[in-house]
Image 1 (cartoon, helix red, strand yellow):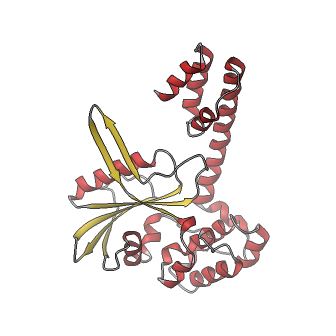
Image 2 (cartoon, rainbow, N blue to C red):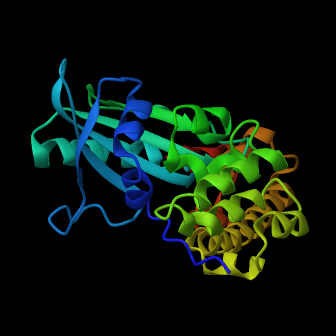
Length: 284
């Protein structure tokens, strides 16, 4: 049976750091000098964040800030702005931030590639590169090669075919450094193939997936999403009973709100005297 995989982003990128920084920057001359992640960089608290010190003859030393996000959230632009500024302040080097989204977000959520805010005539702007894995051709993983992306092959474009998943599995098993990532490959294969077929391809018990942090994160998010949707539906019912039909735009705006925010809006929906008054509260 395959071992539970350590799927921390640092470990994935460290499989081939030069290939990774060349891919995310689209600069073939860039090389990775060092992965900067330790206790001295205490503001990075999760394994999804990896800071790489890179070098090119044209630009000299600079930082590549990598954020691997299971699913994009509305908070990511602010997070990218904060992390980029902190990295640049800590190391005094130009910083190239990259957001890698693994799974597509809800259709109502637009993925932003920059943070922008204007307050009292002052503007804050932070651009960052966005890479959506479902838009990346699976062939690039084998052609370049990009071993860091092998576990994600099933969810890449064209990667959901049995033959492609088998090819990724063979590549993992052929390298002692990579073979512990089998369970991560199986996990993402289960998104596009039936479980019995994945079991047949992998030839081991799929219960190992439950040991994966990815599985646990999705399970927790599923619980949270169910709670959020329940409160949202209840709020919409309250609004309809009080003010009649609700514009679709209002429902769409509620989808991205937290459970705590929805509960506060529920109190407001009961207290306000008109739908316009409620809309003012949402926009505050």
